Every structure is written in C-alpha cells, then in structure tokens.
Image (cartoon, rainbow, N blue to C red; front, side, top):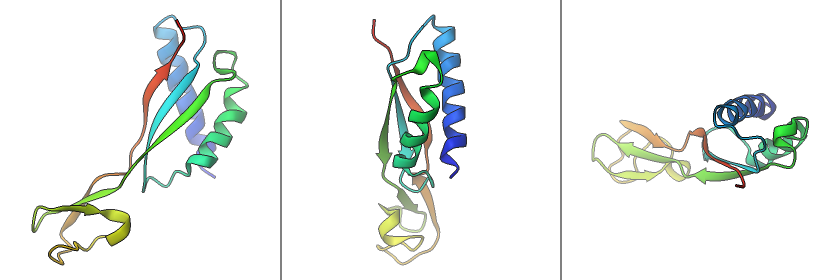
Length: 115
C-alpha cells in the first residue's frame, strides 16, 4: 500500500503551506486523483485519517478526493477518448499512436481553513 507514503508527502506539503500562511489549523484538503494514477482513494483516505490525527494542525481534517477521468489523445486523428474503456488503441481510427492527456494526476487542489 503506497498510499501511506503519499499521505506523508501530502501532510508535509500542507503543513508547509499552512505555516507559510500563518494557518494554525487546516479543516480540509482537496486532492485531484487521476483515474489511472494507481492511487486507491479509499485507501488514501484511510491512511489520511490515521496519519492526520497525529498532527495537531490536521487533527479532524477531512481529505476529499476528486477523481479525474483518464483521457487519451490520438496523434493520428486528433480525437480524444476514454482511456480506461479503450486502452492505447484509438476507437475512432485504430491507431496506437496515442498519448495520455489527463488522468494520472495526484495533486493538492485546495487547502481549506475556517476564518
């Protein structure tokens, strides 16, 4: 389960941003998680709960995950299509000259604090 390691990096980055902005307590963190990022959101949230509650600044902080659909662009015909459904082969023209355009993100989108 690599989600625990990722949670430690998220906590590090959130604490750094909060400290730089004079924030004493973070109430929520919103993540963008790509559909093909290899992250399992439920595992990430379970690990988050365990680790965040050990940090006074993050105690009770909620982790929210936005799932970003995986989309592939075909270089041959220029059309996009859902990656998970069709894989590397373009359903429009049959070409395998394709590239993933989104869906593998793992990024902090927002840090929520009460004023």
